[in-house]
Length: 508
Ligand code: HEM
Image 1: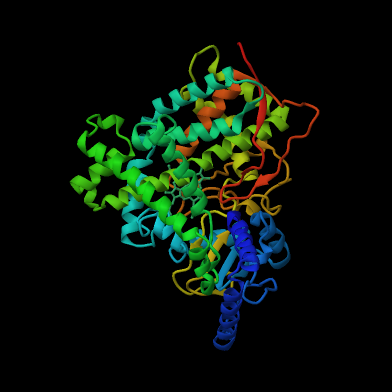
Image 2: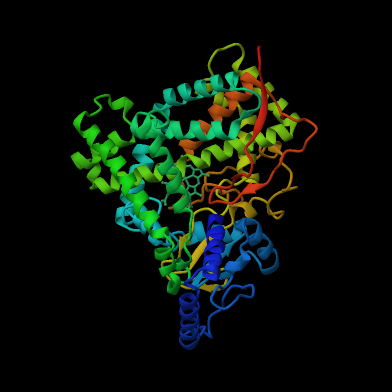
């Protein structure tokens, strides 16, 4: 979420250097005076500990460019439940497995809402998608479409040929690539193409119109990850109108809508008769037109769900692959052990089957350790309290935003031995999994609002990783030099610099 912080910093700069400085300062002063006058903290409430805050900004200035790291340090001082203030928004920060269990299991129903922003309202069809829809009957119906129809194990299996073909293309690209291979770029392309083919039945990396869609998606992700200052200090909402941010949101939303309308129209005119080869648009159109499953969705719902799948499913999976390869290159003994496992199971066969993947226990351990050590969305997706509730003896008010620092939880020495070490073996004799039942490892969240895309994401991650470690030997281009491990700020935390590597084809 640090686009968040970057944006706030950017917007603060704009306040300071902008010709509208005077207006901003006057608004802020009035706002501060009014809130001071009316706001009286509840005397009889027991609130979680809070770090000291500034007037108006609250704790916004303490987030830094990588908030998961800053919030971890704050939690070390103030405890696993902290109450921060992002401008006027009270925000509960959760930093231990026990506290996360209270939120996502014991009181899951109370925390089943998401905070709503004007950006997601405009980009996601007035909250008609799954990930930001308010908790209620509409969200329940969409979530069940995702879990039972779009992202079920059976559906994920039906996309097997897409994974096969796209992974074969990746392997070919690596073979032909000039030195060094830019793996970060290749993983991003692959995950986009896999999601695109699963959603539309074709890719967007080919053809002019399709390239436009790709650049719109990149903008969508950027905008969804941004938090204009007006979200936290409502009196400053006008800044987004004046600095062109609102106009950019409107433009991206309009152009995405035109593209998706085109895809839907085309599919309605020439429906896909092959039920086994159905893609997400086919399935959603079928539900829309036949009112099957007793669910009624409209055209906007279809477009919003498709955008969700792109926003949630591409960047995240590419990040896991990127960090997994990074750690394998930094730990040659782990790479060797993984290659031995994969090559022994595959032997001299041409293709890796789902059955082979099932047997690759070390591969699964490497992926789990990557999700622990480099949690792709370190602060998960924020929730919001629907009612007043007591958590660990503290009073939490309805409307409080909740941020779970899953990154800090999976490095908590209370739950993990030597948490700062990348050590996949820790999972070999352990039943801990990432599916939302073990709160020390929750990269996909948990409970009602937990991620429905785990099977989809894992199918791609396991298959791609198994193939590239089997078919190539890998080295850093400059062996004497330490790999740069800096993280790039964002909702999904990538490497700051692309992963460049040397690959040699392996012959069994
Ligand atoms: C490594 C890959 C992925 C990671 C780390 C990830 C992580 C997450 C997280 C942390 C949440 C919020 C959970 C919560 O609030 O408890 C979430 C929600 C969601 N994810 Fe994923 N995700 C991944 C892949 C996918 C894929 C591939 C899809 C779809 C194709 C997907 C679709 C969704 C949707 C629709 C939601 C919203 C669920 C709701 O609000 O009810 N995700 N994901």
